[in-house]
Image (cartoon, rainbow, N blue to C red):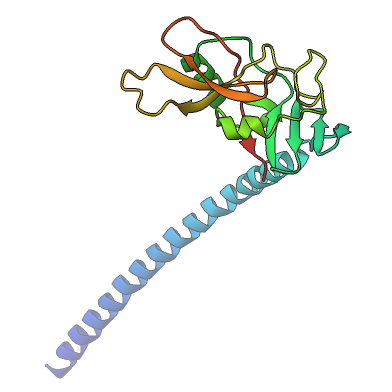
Amino acid sequence: MRCVTCWIQNWWVASVDYKQRIFYLSIDYQRRNQMKKMMLLLPGLLAVILVWTSIGYSAKKPKQIGKEEHWVAFDNGTVLDTKTKLMWPSKSSPTMKWGDAKRYAENFKGGGYTDWRLPTAAELETLLDPWLKSPKGYKLTKYIDIQQCCPWASGRKRRDKKDQFREAFDFFRGAAFFATKINDQKNPSLPVRVAK
């Protein structure tokens, strides 16, 4: 009887050991398959990283094409004011209503940048220089071409309950003024961004 119980015990231990071995082998098989999949994905991941970094490093840095006092013009169609660190496009939009001018500035992608906005009157005033004249006779650098004297600004008139007036800046007179946005008054949009 003792031999039969020993045999049953040994069989039980052997079968449990066999089940554990099969379990561990299946885990090893799963791990090996996961490693194979990772090894197959690794070259693809490396290729994506290489392409991404090469695109990032190959972005063309704008080249300076002109300088006048604190104004620097670049070949990507932007002009940097080194005093205020504001960047402007070298050309304004055609004339348009204020709402369209705001949308134009927000969607502008000049120089490859996407953070353009409609400037305040104070920011437009930083463009004013009574000693400089643009080719059209405006009192600002020759590197910025505005289509008309008075680009739109983002400001609005205080206590304007009907929301009728928006600010614009006159580069002939050198002063900000309020223009009506409800009628068909059209001025150009001259977006701005802060250079980093």
